[in-house]
Image 1 (tube, one colour):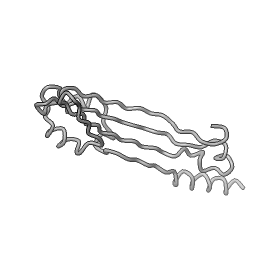
Image 2 (cartoon, rainbow, N blue to C red):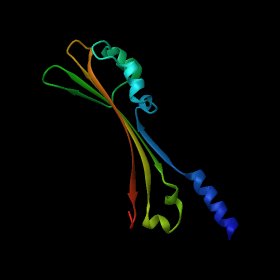
Image 3 (cartoon, helix red, strand yellow):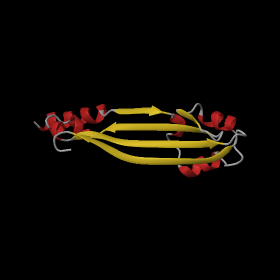
Image 4 (cartoon, rainbow, N blue to C red):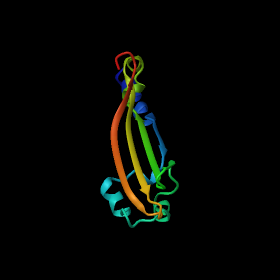
Length: 128
Protein backbone atom coordinates (compact mmCIF):
# COMPACT_ATOMS: atom_id res chain seq x y z
CA UNK A 1 0.00 0.00 0.00
CA UNK A 2 2.79 2.48 0.89
CA UNK A 3 4.59 1.75 -2.39
CA UNK A 4 1.43 2.53 -4.37
CA UNK A 5 1.02 5.82 -2.51
CA UNK A 6 4.63 6.82 -3.19
CA UNK A 7 4.34 5.92 -6.87
CA UNK A 8 1.08 7.85 -7.14
CA UNK A 9 2.66 10.94 -5.55
CA UNK A 10 5.66 10.74 -7.89
CA UNK A 11 3.46 10.40 -10.96
CA UNK A 12 1.29 13.32 -9.81
CA UNK A 13 4.33 15.55 -9.27
CA UNK A 14 5.66 14.70 -12.74
CA UNK A 15 2.31 15.31 -14.44
CA UNK A 16 1.57 18.68 -12.86
CA UNK A 17 0.42 20.86 -15.70
CA UNK A 18 1.23 24.39 -16.64
CA UNK A 19 -0.59 26.64 -19.10
CA UNK A 20 0.72 29.98 -20.26
CA UNK A 21 -0.43 32.54 -22.79
CA UNK A 22 0.53 35.98 -23.95
CA UNK A 23 3.79 37.81 -24.45
CA UNK A 24 6.68 35.71 -23.10
CA UNK A 25 9.02 38.73 -23.26
CA UNK A 26 7.38 40.22 -20.16
CA UNK A 27 7.00 36.88 -18.34
CA UNK A 28 10.16 37.28 -16.23
CA UNK A 29 10.29 41.06 -15.91
CA UNK A 30 9.63 43.27 -12.89
CA UNK A 31 8.84 47.00 -12.80
CA UNK A 32 12.44 48.11 -12.24
CA UNK A 33 13.59 46.17 -15.29
CA UNK A 34 10.79 47.65 -17.39
CA UNK A 35 11.70 51.15 -16.15
CA UNK A 36 15.27 50.68 -17.43
CA UNK A 37 13.91 49.63 -20.85
CA UNK A 38 11.23 52.32 -21.30
CA UNK A 39 11.74 56.03 -20.60
CA UNK A 40 8.73 58.35 -20.72
CA UNK A 41 9.23 61.16 -23.24
CA UNK A 42 12.24 59.45 -24.87
CA UNK A 43 11.50 55.87 -25.97
CA UNK A 44 9.90 55.59 -29.41
CA UNK A 45 7.11 53.31 -30.60
CA UNK A 46 9.60 51.46 -32.81
CA UNK A 47 11.93 50.84 -29.84
CA UNK A 48 9.05 49.43 -27.76
CA UNK A 49 8.05 47.11 -30.61
CA UNK A 50 11.68 46.01 -31.03
CA UNK A 51 12.00 45.17 -27.28
CA UNK A 52 8.58 43.60 -26.64
CA UNK A 53 7.19 42.62 -30.05
CA UNK A 54 3.61 43.16 -31.11
CA UNK A 55 1.17 44.16 -28.35
CA UNK A 56 -1.77 41.98 -27.31
CA UNK A 57 -4.10 44.96 -27.74
CA UNK A 58 -3.97 48.44 -29.32
CA UNK A 59 -6.41 51.23 -28.41
CA UNK A 60 -6.68 54.50 -30.34
CA UNK A 61 -7.84 57.42 -28.20
CA UNK A 62 -9.74 60.53 -29.32
CA UNK A 63 -6.88 62.84 -28.27
CA UNK A 64 -4.45 61.25 -30.77
CA UNK A 65 -2.70 59.02 -28.26
CA UNK A 66 -2.33 55.29 -28.74
CA UNK A 67 -2.31 52.69 -25.94
CA UNK A 68 -0.51 49.36 -26.31
CA UNK A 69 -1.13 46.54 -23.86
CA UNK A 70 1.11 43.52 -23.39
CA UNK A 71 -0.22 40.64 -21.28
CA UNK A 72 1.15 37.36 -19.95
CA UNK A 73 -0.64 34.74 -17.84
CA UNK A 74 0.60 31.46 -16.41
CA UNK A 75 -1.50 28.92 -14.51
CA UNK A 76 0.02 25.90 -12.77
CA UNK A 77 -2.26 23.10 -11.65
CA UNK A 78 -2.21 22.53 -7.88
CA UNK A 79 -0.91 19.02 -6.97
CA UNK A 80 -4.07 18.34 -4.94
CA UNK A 81 -5.95 18.34 -8.26
CA UNK A 82 -4.39 14.96 -9.09
CA UNK A 83 -5.54 13.14 -5.94
CA UNK A 84 -8.60 11.00 -6.71
CA UNK A 85 -11.75 11.93 -4.76
CA UNK A 86 -9.99 14.81 -2.98
CA UNK A 87 -10.01 16.80 -6.22
CA UNK A 88 -13.83 16.63 -6.25
CA UNK A 89 -13.84 18.76 -3.11
CA UNK A 90 -10.92 21.07 -3.80
CA UNK A 91 -8.61 21.60 -6.75
CA UNK A 92 -7.41 24.48 -8.87
CA UNK A 93 -4.46 26.47 -10.15
CA UNK A 94 -1.85 28.93 -8.94
CA UNK A 95 -1.95 31.91 -11.28
CA UNK A 96 0.58 34.56 -12.27
CA UNK A 97 -0.23 37.54 -14.48
CA UNK A 98 1.83 40.41 -15.81
CA UNK A 99 0.66 43.42 -17.79
CA UNK A 100 2.55 46.24 -19.46
CA UNK A 101 0.59 49.27 -20.70
CA UNK A 102 2.34 51.89 -22.84
CA UNK A 103 0.70 55.18 -23.86
CA UNK A 104 2.18 56.97 -26.89
CA UNK A 105 1.72 60.64 -27.75
CA UNK A 106 1.02 61.88 -31.28
CA UNK A 107 4.81 62.17 -31.89
CA UNK A 108 5.24 58.37 -31.50
CA UNK A 109 7.03 58.79 -28.12
CA UNK A 110 6.12 57.05 -24.86
CA UNK A 111 3.96 59.44 -22.86
CA UNK A 112 3.49 57.09 -19.87
CA UNK A 113 3.91 53.43 -19.09
CA UNK A 114 2.85 51.10 -16.28
CA UNK A 115 3.73 47.53 -15.36
CA UNK A 116 1.89 45.26 -12.94
CA UNK A 117 2.50 41.72 -11.72
CA UNK A 118 0.02 39.76 -9.63
CA UNK A 119 -0.23 36.31 -8.08
CA UNK A 120 -3.50 34.57 -7.32
CA UNK A 121 -5.28 31.25 -7.40
CA UNK A 122 -8.32 29.69 -8.95
CA UNK A 123 -10.19 27.18 -6.79
CA UNK A 124 -12.86 24.72 -7.91
CA UNK A 125 -14.70 21.86 -6.26
CA UNK A 126 -17.36 21.36 -3.64
CA UNK A 127 -15.31 22.96 -0.85
CA UNK A 128 -13.80 25.80 -2.90
